[in-house]
Image 1 (cartoon, rainbow, N blue to C red):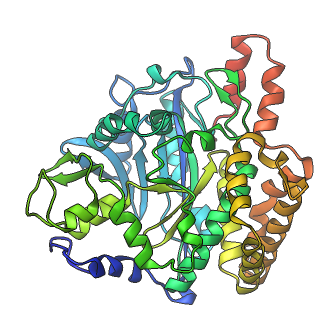
Image 2: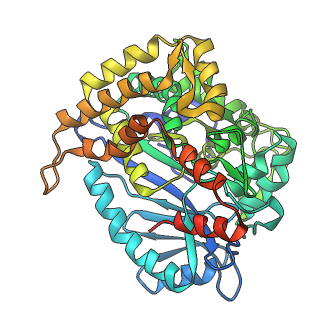
Length: 452
């Protein structure tokens, strides 16, 4: 890979970024990211960055516990410790990003080790962490923005591309799982499977049925919001299903996506109506004759948001946030089908039977109907159960055990329960919400959902 300071002038140099992401079969790892809204527990208002008791104070307290600060100029915008990251989304959603792990038990232990000190601090500050796919209470106008220049530039850009981009930035929260690939062929197959299954699997995590205290005709409103956010850089990427898909084809896609901005001299500089290809040709109007570095490439990669995103690993990005055991379940599902050859072959056969029309149908229908979606004249739960069992068997064959002699398939339990009850988190929330008769009861119910 080129040095981060060297200029890039040939597309082949961009290919190496992804090629060097290939891992050996015995070293495949998994990572988990989960986002949580932060409210004051008494008022149920979103916590701002700066105030007498704001997010900046929380971050400063974590510095005293051995976390290392991440700064933009002099502003503390994130924290890191032993490969773990705590960062902020535009509306103050707190994102916990694990390091990479060889198994789910290791991932779980790391999370529990670090989250204990965080929860102790948030309790002292009267903060409530809430894991849902969409903010159930706050209007857009009530949400504080985080002091990151990147988000300021995106805030300026979003209203011109899609109707719900600003809601995506400030009122959504998700789970994401990162997984490795061993070759270009392996990457392509996992990319296709991930894109095809994303709408299905997201139904098991649907938790975004409330907006500003009102029930919505959705199972996952977050998914719907994403479908109305800048289609040039989001979505299902149908080209991935073509035979020509590979690292080079993905580079071509990225070269043609409009730039948000470039980063120079500790500033994000907006770029208007030009692409990374223009940058490669030395034709950026704001930097005529200058060429990009690998850091510019990495920044650009981070500004596309498809359902599955390729970096030096694959990100599965399609699920609402929720209780943390659902996060472990999501990681276990993808590990079970991707890191066992027999399960991988079985799930590949299922995905290859999907037509383009069926893939598009599932993307459009599942945000509304969730697990109650009809697919091929039967409930989607039938196919979901098949997929879960394939993942379960893959995890059984991995045979990685905890001290209780349980294998990683134990993490799938919340998903099997959803299918057994035929009731999603959104279904459960809807039933309980309809029975509430006052705002006070609503507030108590929201508090009962807090992360602990």
